[in-house]
Length: 231
Image (cartoon, rainbow, N blue to C red; front, side, top):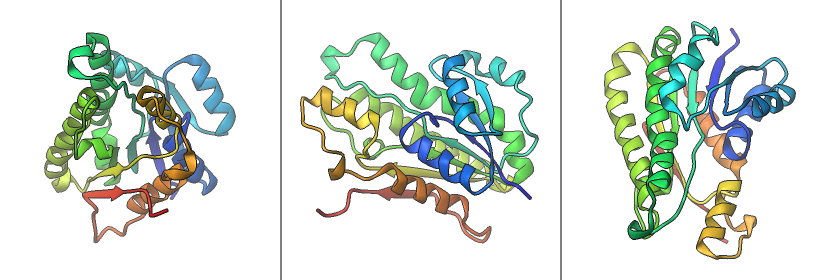
């Protein structure tokens, strides 16, 4: 039976690598796109995928966006890969910077997961939250981003206990610095030179996520950290 996965953040970075790998092996994809333009790009890249226009920066409207999407009754996984980051010390943070990171990184995954639970339960599926090393340790100027990711870990921990009786597995993946467009932005904000070869490749994190999805039913992986290897 073909497996079905809902993926956020498939437009670039880790999300694109995950979607590439799942599509290549013949799994069905449901992809969220923040705009009609991005939806068209994803539809062109992933033939046969179902693409839903739903902006994670506006979580209050996610239910409405998904209501008209005719989602499958069974979801083998929901993969929360999308994320945003803006570095700033607490005294420099603006409301909009805080709100956007909390909405996209925390509120939207919570709302989306809740909406998808019936389909996840029907398939005894897996929820994967792509968190961050910043969800385990907070450093100066990372306060708003880390707060959103610490919150995401807390939600994942609670969800894991709630959904275990329904056969739904929940995993948090904590990648270290990964060579993605987000990492390029971080280096710009840190005023540091960017060398993609220094960091984890997004394909490596994607392979970790697929390993989580393909675990036999007799096992679960609550958390997994991925760090850059020695150079």
